[in-house]
Length: 381
Figure 1 (cartoon, helix red, strand yellow):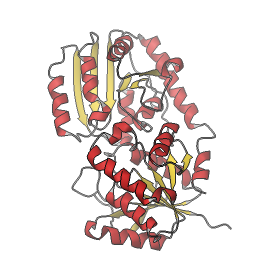
Figure 2 (cartoon, helix red, strand yellow; figure 1 turned 90 degrees about the vertical axis):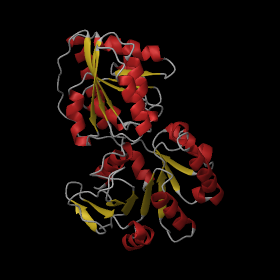
Figure 3 (cartoon, one colour; figure 1 turned 180 degrees about the horizontal axis):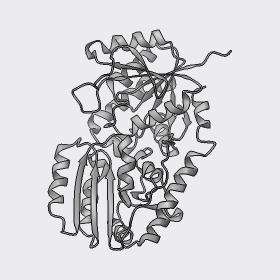
């Protein structure tokens, strides 16, 4: 019997964490799919993004088996011994592939790449930037990121590793910064656990809208609030997500207080992934005018729940109007966003059902596509 190959995933935050958003979900979905063919080991921290306290009831500094996923996870809490311990675990596991996520973490990216440069790591290293090379992402703390990109390139480490691009746009970004690199394009794997379609009453003239994302400028919550300022229909607007930028959130709250009486806003804070489906099913329209998404798991969760979306054209989800599952609009056309909210608010039950059912069917077809996992066999080969 052929021995199964080992994949060791290094990611700063993993389940049960959820506040780091998409990267956690991307790796989780990848684990669910690949565990049947590979032995999966995930090396991560014992805290959620932005949290001081560790997870409750989870053993640290040892490999444990996650019963539902059937993979091994190592939750480290000894930060002073982090580098030494990571090197020990890599040597102990002896993986065939080391899979890195994002781009600028000293512990989870720079150190493993340094080990690769020094040939301490001899196995295949795969790096997935997960959108961190997009201009919208690089513009945040650019004074730190641009010098690091320069050092990456000068070191030549990109010639010793393999890149995982999750779409053609990310492939172009990698080629721009690291020409000549080996790149495998494999789309992010979505959540395939689709619930049964659940209808929602829709009265013409009012609408329930929801925003699910980290509260940071690139997700553009403030822009949504500015759209709502110009909407004449009755809108119940729900905000879900962790507050990562206090100044930005304060600006959003100030603007919320000036909204007209026909707009009601409810902030629910951060919610775990297993709470999102029920929340989405209570709303008619998901809104996210993001400046850039590598995949947009919350967008796809909306499709899974059978809810249309109103998003920017800076995500992989395009041509939505032709599919009757929502709109993807340019950010420099705010009037178009306002118009779409007004149009959706005027939907009667039959019109809403058409969009909702189309979104649910679209997600079902997407998750059942036979070629979805094929590129991953090339990535891990």
